[in-house]
Length: 172
Image 1 (cartoon, helix red, strand yellow):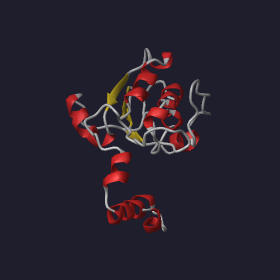
Image 2 (cartoon, rainbow, N blue to C red):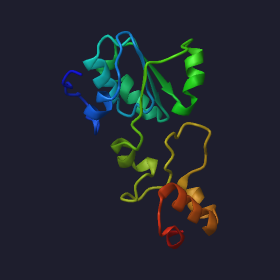
Image 3 (tube, rainbow, N blue to C red):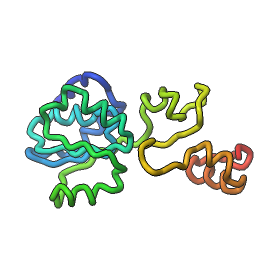
Image 4 (cartoon, rainbow, N blue to C red):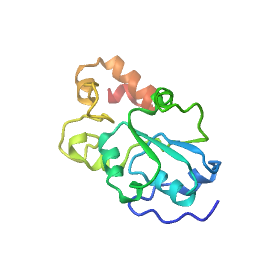
């Protein structure tokens, strides 16, 4: 693997490690399942210019827009898809693609989402507790609705199972 070129707008954590374990084929087709600010995609395409196609997924329309406005992606073979990566097979079928050469997953939340008061991911700001990855889909269930309407027992289960929180009952 070549030494990684510096990324212009966003340097993802563990970029070197992520690309180190991805086997890159000339004329390969790759999926970035969590596009975010496009750091992994940009590094992949800069360091491996013979990649045939990159298909980039993100639930957050704002993330897609940021990357579409990034001049780096302007003349690249990239398809942006505003959807959850769990639906990738449906999109590949629509694109008439039967197999891909690799997947990138950067699971987590972005600093852009944390810093946006309207997204409600952080308790540092005084804003509604939303916490949805996509604010444009039909999912109207916000964290605020869950906290205010779910039973103590159900909140305990959620905090324990998904948050691996040992003090789930006390928190609920």
